Image 1 (cartoon, rainbow, N blue to C red):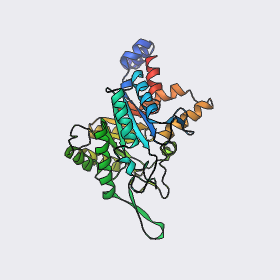
Image 2 (image 1 turned 90 degrees about the vertical axis):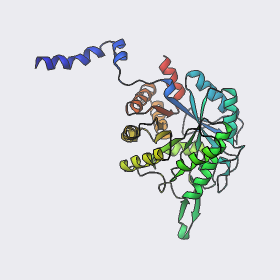
Image 3 (image 1 turned 180 degrees about the vertical axis):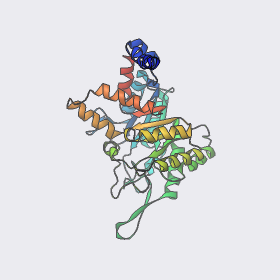
Image 4 (image 1 turned 90 degrees about the horizontal axis):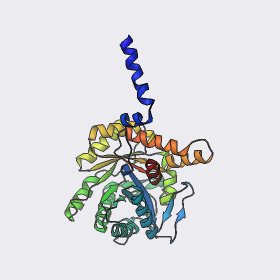
Length: 332
């Protein structure tokens, strides 16, 4: 019994000294673990604030480049780009246009900072007039569905266009069936065998996406996305989705959202063994910002606790709108 009591005291002695706490800490967080999302718009010539996401902006290409370079200088190596085209259409043609806004931003960023890791989101929702992630077909009585195979063909075309512009990684976020395999085949056929695919492998139909849809101007104009995004109640399905993407040659996986799905993150990482990212989504960002503005939370302390939780749950990478701030806090 005495021995058991002595063992129970040992962690207390290790916690009593700040330097000791650092060297025995089980989970570490680095600026290099962070990815900064940026919203690049062809409709503006100066940065425009996103009302529901304090501190986040829609950016013209030149400002997006400046933001990416500032993130690099802060220690954040990677950015994830979302595009807002000047015009939208039924087929989301801006997603795969050679002069699309993200394609322009990728070229400009790689020219200004070749060492930047530029990740391009691959989806149609920001580019379609209806706001869905694929090609829609309408039936009687207002019913509609998203045509999976037609959508996959356009997503593969978008991925090739982005790789040709210089994107280091393409990240399909649409959740269509078979899109990772189709994108891999299209990239390989066009000579982009070394362009990795970071797949949104487990993306749930979440209530936490609202502010993002404001920022990306990509809210559905009818219906919802529950037919292709995942039911929040389904964990085993999330693992099957991730396994399918691995089988189709995904190089990295993303779990989205973050905080409500730490259990999924852990299981996806354990099952796949691949580099795994978590998306700390807009709703998670907005609710902490709102509470901090009210004085109900210490923003820095809350954010650092969240980031540590993501790492503890298995994330190798964290996509977060706080990337620059977290990098600065880590330096301090």
